[in-house]
Length: 160
Image (cartoon, rainbow, N blue to C red):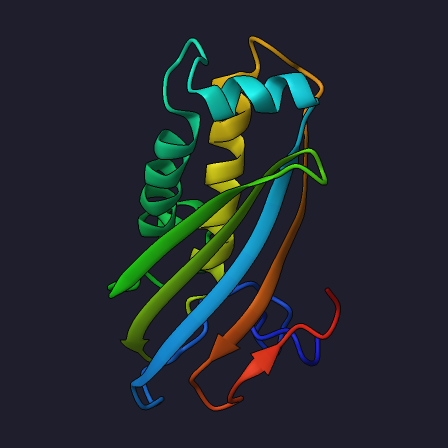
């Protein structure tokens, strides 16, 4: 299990001990998207979806998801988040919605999982809010774009 930090020397899963690490400012940015028909996207853009403001509700859901990451991912440390921001933009080229989440904290471990969870929950909320119109929407592209802070330093995805 060399290289996998969530396993001990016997191969048992465990929460990583971060007690000896210094606190540093940490930021993570993740993205994902929901692909849909142009007609569904038009309904979302016009604000006429039966459940209301799809983008506004998805933004709030993403923020709430980031705050609950440690409850959802078994070995994640609960973190005091200093910032959770979601950008949800219309992407006519998909067609659909692109979601980008930025999370930040000052702590001993990173906020990558919080950013990824925020995007996931926002995308799932978009699906939930629009599924009455289209059930075959596609959620994809979930990935970490960048992270800063910690011993490993800054990292940025190299592919678009």
